[in-house]
Amino acid sequence: MIKKLVAQVVLENIYKSFLSVAKAEKAKFPAVAQPLIAAVEEMPQAVNSINVLRRIDLAVEDGEFMVLVGPSGCGKSTLLRLIAGLEEMTGGNIWIGDTLVNNLPPKARDIAMVFQNYALYPHMTVYDNIAFGLRRGARGGQEKNLSTWAENTLGGMTRLLPAPLHYKGDREQEVDKRVKNVASLLQIEALLNRLPKQLSGGQKQRVALGRAISRNPQVFLMDEPLSNLDAKLRAETRAQIVKLQRQLGTTTIYVTHDQTEAMTMGTRIAVMNLGQLQQVARPLELYNRPATQFVAEFIGSPPMNFLEVEFQSPLVISHPLFRFTLPEVWQLALSKYDRQPLILGIRPEHFELDKASSNNLPVQVDLVEALGNETYLSVSPTNSTNAASIQVRIPPHRSVSLQEQLWLSFTPDKLHFFDPDTGKAIWYD
Ligand SMILES: Nc1ncnc2c1ncn2[C@@H]1O[C@H](COP(=O)(O)OP(=O)(O)OP(=O)(O)O)[C@@H](O)[C@H]1O
Ligand SMILES: [Mg+2]
Image 1 (cartoon, rainbow, N blue to C red):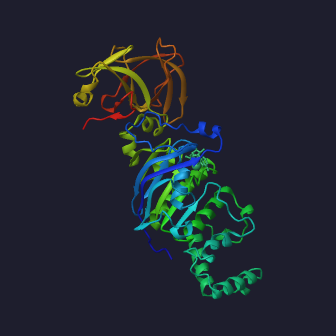
Image 2 (image 1 turned 180 degrees about the vertical axis):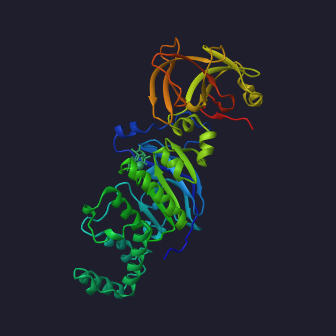
Image 3 (image 1 turned 60 degrees about the horizontal axis):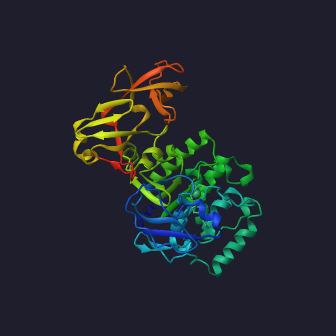
């Protein structure tokens, strides 16, 4: 049954605004983006409307697992709903495969969507939940004719009888094959006769996935499908979804705000904020080369630390508490920032506990979190009353006590710089 159907999904210049019902709604979503991405052409904003998505360009390749991440309210679900056809676009184009689907109804888009709250039919068994879309004739409804009706009616009536007496026409036999195939893929064969209320959260989740998979769509859209599960089940189901997706090769767009899911599941990750795409890249590329301060902070846990410093040409970084010389690779990229402020970014694992020196940052330990395999410190720069606290990762064998004074040095080739006005990363080639 698993025939490999693959399709590219292309989003071109997508805009979406909602009419605001009340002024209070408007306040939830600022009309102007934060100055993170410069030179964004704003769409002329209609009176009384809230721009929720702006200028989204994204090409999801055949068979790719694209993860969409971003904070609550940034527009992830809205974007999925536009692709599924459940919401109308304000501007832009969507292609699935070679078809421009802007005006196609959801049923004709050959997409299966898994929602966060899995919405199973409570009065139907697991089997019937999975079979539902297949019986309905999920592919555009072209099978709605008299014989289908008769088969469905006979099938429906005899389903109340013991299994050997069920009526199974050709179509129902095909449905049966597909349901069983999907059930075995998801290891829920033993649950087929249960009702949703007799299942655990993780089992319900797998049934919801089964329902989507059984239709063998061109594209899967999944909106935070694991958010109702506990940590262990989440990790298990996460691995299962990835395995399945690789097996089926179905183009998938997966929404989450859990960055472990994003980093471990995605072929690529698209990071969104305030209705705009910030960066689209492979997981480790996002981690190693975040394009904006927002991405740098959002990807990585604990997040990257930021310090305001001043740059002095050719290569000196100065801060009230330290001063050091950068590797030469930075010279050209930073040349236009002479005597200008810069944001220095450094991840918790890229500090070293070092000796007292004017090159190093003196700090005081406020909190120690020993996790066994690693230890995190929350420290504050010495003598700075309201500086933000800094997260530092140290090896587990190094013991540190509260209030201890430490000196931190910066791993020279792991520094990030951001323009304080635009929030954009400054890169050397
Ligand atoms: N029907 C609607 N009418 C007006 N505003 C809406 C409507 N649907 C969504 N919004 C607004 O659009 C913005 C994006 O919502 P969306 O549900 O896409 O966010 P999200 O990224 O999925 O967030 P979450 O992670 O919390 O699910 C929000 O500010 C929301 O209030
Ligand atoms: Mg959402």
